[in-house]
Length: 157
Length: 411
Image 1 (tube, rainbow over the protein chains, first blue to last red):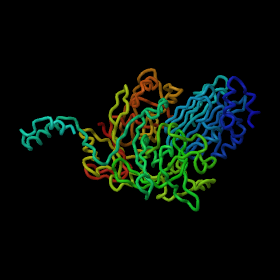
Image 2: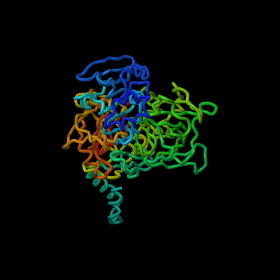
Image 3: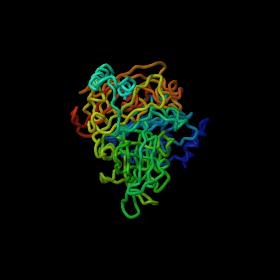
Image 4: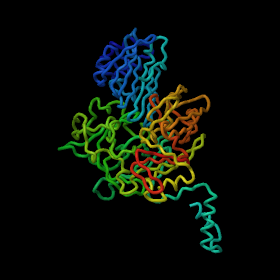
């Protein structure tokens, strides 16, 4: 279903992309998908306001409500979301933010305690955790980073 | 204990009783304060366990307790004692994986052929399963009947779409290194605050069919509950005592979880336990206590469920199986201030390279830090070498304390 969108990106990392496909949902922007659906993410996650700013080399779409904040990082060349970050009092809607189960990424190293989880593969880094009232996290597709942009530039909202 | 051992080694018959008592007082005065022996209102904590090998850093700084659970109104044999339950001051209520609980508990009924289920969010994922009444025994306290959650992914009704329990879930003990969680945050029910209600969401589900949408209100008596509030006595707070751990680490370090504050003196009397050490008082909830770190004020948690001190920093993370634990090139000394506007207590802590430390195979370290971008967590390292008092209700006697409040002293 999403294959047409993702195939142009086929490269050495495509094996990992394909493994993610079964978990992908078409209706939202989600990590690795087109930024054209950010509006639907906003609706799904009940976020009220949206603001876009352009940082060097990429666009950051900020979505927010009174108790939850999301940033979607868009590569202007591909139009794809290369990273998402979030923070808020409510637990995150992982399905809308990531579109796949962070604990089930094939071949990834997963480090998990009750509070935090770290997922790492050659093309993906996800860090999230916290407690009620203070949840946060970020997910970065290393293979989709715009040229010259580092993963560390992906900041929390 | 120390005194009686000492006396039994002496030729007691040659001394009169008053002399012995006088000698004991002199001996006591010359000794560092010693904790009275625990009798009935406590249970043991073990930090770290080799039960979950291969978890990497997931196996360090986990304070485990054992809890006994029985089926209500049933005969002997319908009970199970479950070990490796993570003591968690950052959540409310007892939650146990069904695979570690070999007894049959019935979901609280929400109507004909339907029961109460819950999706509860922890930082690393959510847990799903029925809410059931259970008879819970903590240490040698009297048994109490409270709602608990049985974590039973894949059994019974599936979690609703977008409930938060579809993706990123904790589904088995080895996922996070625990058979269950004993949540002793200072609330009686798990929906007692808005932020808890947002994280611990209830559903009414058919036993084999779909669940309805999230329930907006659930009667207090049916919510997953902190079992300490239900104790007949010893219900006004908890005391957590973990010994000092050297920076080189320790294995299976033991401590005490004591129930009640000043309810059975001297066993849970803060003045007796802390001896000559100063008791620092913070008139804020341990669940969210203002903390200043690196010029940023946040609502920090005093949290046994955090296996490190968690804070934002540019210090390098270890990555891989050690995830977001910090791996500084050299020992780093840091400090944060508890409740800067009132108590204003600076507390120093050290962070060393987690890869080097955990390679030793030990299970307790006071010097592990981890990345948390949106706040500060006083995790298990803060508890080592301290006595932490978390107040649930009014305390009278040697101290007069009222919630919201917590306190700590050195040992």
